Length: 410
Figure (spheres, rainbow, N blue to C red):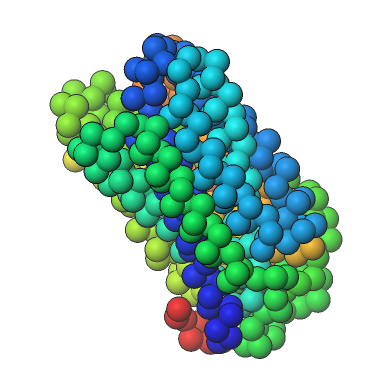
């Protein structure tokens, strides 16, 4: 394997960790920002929508820019801007300045998110085997690092603005130091992948495509975006409602209820660490279909079972099932037309991000009509629909599993 390709893969891991760390650095300082600005929970919720809107706008801008100027320029630039923008929410002193700060930070974060995913698509194509899920797993590692850094800064008595500025400065240095290792342009797949059929994006059933654009790419990308909307809506609902479900529906104490989200997040991270090998062995379609089906079983268990141990098991199955879905959708979008990988990933990621923002609100609205646990049945329906539509990832006639073609490994 080319050393420069290995370096590019490591650099991509670094940018995913960086993105997760920067977002996590804001999340751990949300309580301090709310107190400093003097807003209610409801007002803060409205301000957080601006973070999402900024991210959505950044995704739509960065995708085409990445296709035009290359990831080696757009990814580090986005990393620098996102790192610099992190300090802005820490400096905000009233709702208006916090609103502007979140809009700018969200925009920069969206640029980094899409550009690094577009580069990850090119790295995966060059490797000739699935590596996308591993990148997404390291995003979660960044959140853990941010939590540890935030806790350490708080125990040292460091002000939030100073803590965020320090993390931002480190982020700028990391973004610049990793830039040289990025690929300068899309690289041809590894020689082992020679079984692709012209007119498809399949490499012997693995979901790792050749550089031939698909017919009907626009319609396919739109369907991938709809599926991303559904699965990320499920993820967003779990983020905000898992702990509340255990506390309000099952009567668990607050400290026990918090483990519901921890169980979901740990299962999702574990699943993403394993997903690339599963994709290499069984294909991306199988991972999407069976993962969505597993998630449907998990959230149905949460919705219908009154026992706490069943709820924990359900949230674990839900996270494990969802873990490999989003990386496969992003990867398929980027590979649909390598010349427009950034733009296509931005469409799928953008609509998916809307789903993640809409999930908590939609479940909240449903609680005015039905009980919280019964509202989760909607998530079951979305997961079942995703499983049924997983055939969108069947892109070639030969579905021979990867393990019959070449060794699996990193």
